[in-house]
Length: 249
Image (spheres, rainbow, N blue to C red):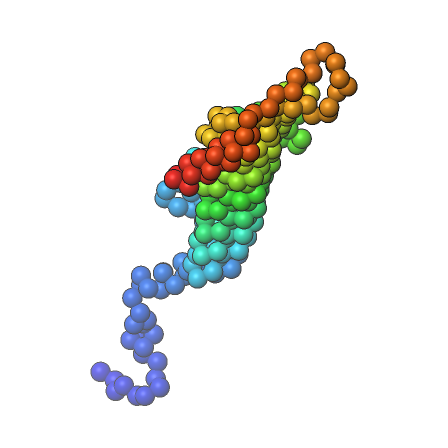
């Protein structure tokens, strides 16, 4: 057997001491832009990678053919992006806007199956903050439906807000648990009347009716003057009761 002279190439020195699976694993590591990568779960992704994770711009098509297009950070939807649903052979937008940690967070627009829309603030996948919701109307301007503009908390109407109904009526006031709660004013536009009062769980507790625009004396249909005794006391007690109910929730 010939002597092993230092620096001489031998069959053994040409062989890699590294195990084959490690070499294959290194080659499989993904960094930067890549063509489509397929998973055994049925999902596929095309876009940018960092440290073997989806990071940057990219598109995922899920097993059910829904897809997400937009920004990624460490394998999570993070930044600006659009979630599309695949329905009856075509794609429709479900959500378009900001994402953080794989959920809608920040400002975005949601499109429901029944045509309702919401545009506003989100927190951890729920409506939270100031927004505008259209129920049953045209998404652009709300024509033909009810439109709410105001605040949400944990996915329900909560705080100050205005509901403009399809029949022309308007409510301006406080909300809690998705219902009128607290002080507010309801405008009966077709009748020219308004009601200022206090609500609890969507029900009127007390208040006063009046004309939106005071008509001349003797006008047919005008409301007669009606007053409560100790009206300020009644209103104060009802307000305190509504506030106490809201605080117990």
